[in-house]
Image (cartoon, rainbow, N blue to C red; front, side, top):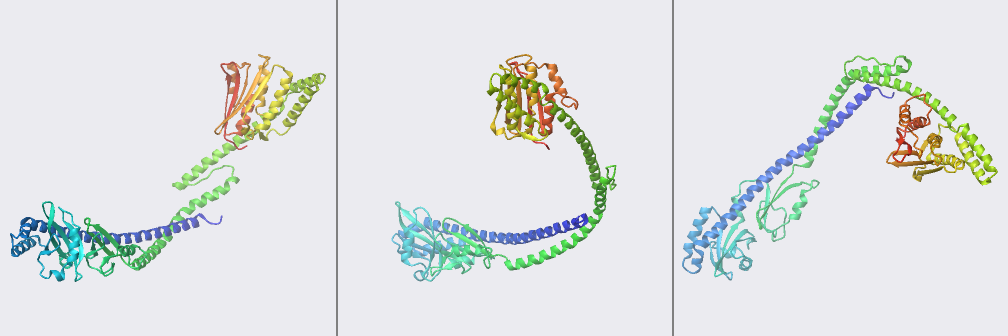
Length: 549
């Protein structure tokens, strides 16, 4: 024995504990990453929601500003019914109510400036040609949203509402919201953010990262490249689309990976050392407690072959005592099985000896030799065939009976046996049906011969035109052997007598001997016999599996 139970148990507990320590450490590492990720994601979502709400509020306020101005005064102002002062007054009153910081401009249908709340309009707002381009892309009946860069590099959100008369735009009301005015009203947030339109034009941001070209376009691809864990200073990103124009990108630097790995390594080492120390103590206690009963069981099992009484004795009032009791039950069953096997072996040799004696009785040899004598004076070819078949049968039958053979070889000998009888009895006929795929199946030697002999012996008492058929088939693992004759001489009493003799060790009936030989060869054998409605006597074996032969 290379290792004792105590040593193996200690080793197994230490091994399992080490795996548990590693798994726990990995779990803590995952939880640490997950918790950090969750907190930052929550903060990112909160900041994104604040910015989104602020953009939506800004949009709503500008929509209301334009609708109020157009509804109350702008059309009349274009017709000359109101002065600039009156328009200024309405604008500032409405802006104050909406708590909005913006500039208001009116352009005619050609893009010429009619009114502006910004006295430095030409120097600070958009170039005239750009304004003309913006109003050309507006939709009647709705407010258009744009992001634009002014001549002095200021970012603006532009809201344009056409003034419609007679189904055409006669002028345009435009609201400008400067980035600086928008940023000043945003609550304090921890995340970096960028607000862009669908073309990548930046309206507002609190970082210069991911901005490209002199036009200050947003580089989304560059931002996405920083989301991989393996890059230096990876980012957590959230994108929120406010409407068809504005999109918000918020991002934060994830917790530094090297710091997390260092912390996790220290934590893993501490947990592993703690687990290992505790595992050694527990393993020693468990192994010491359980080694005694195991060693006692091992010693008694070694002594079993030397003792007359095959029994273990153990009183521990636990699972080891139950194991000892189960082993005792198995030892008793093994002893009983051993005795049964000895009995079976004795019975096997008895009926095999009887089968050898009964394979070809003297009457068969005498009658065959007498037939050879007669045919030698009539037809030499028939005599030669008789001698060849008889020689083949005798040579095959004198080999050891307990050796297995193939079904194909066995059927050749049985057919030779039947041919001899066909020569002796002119009206006798036979038929053998068996697929060639079954010829390689191993079977006990000549186990079908007693069934054929019985059919010949008892069948000719009823019919001189006796016909015997042998049919062998296979379905899945089951082999079926059927021997039939057209005599129909089997009575119900004879059938019951044969079936009752199956378990008798003293019977000499050929069918029962064949059944026992098959039962020693296959795991499961079923026997049935009778007379069918056509008046044919039949005997059927059904076998399954291969046994220990």
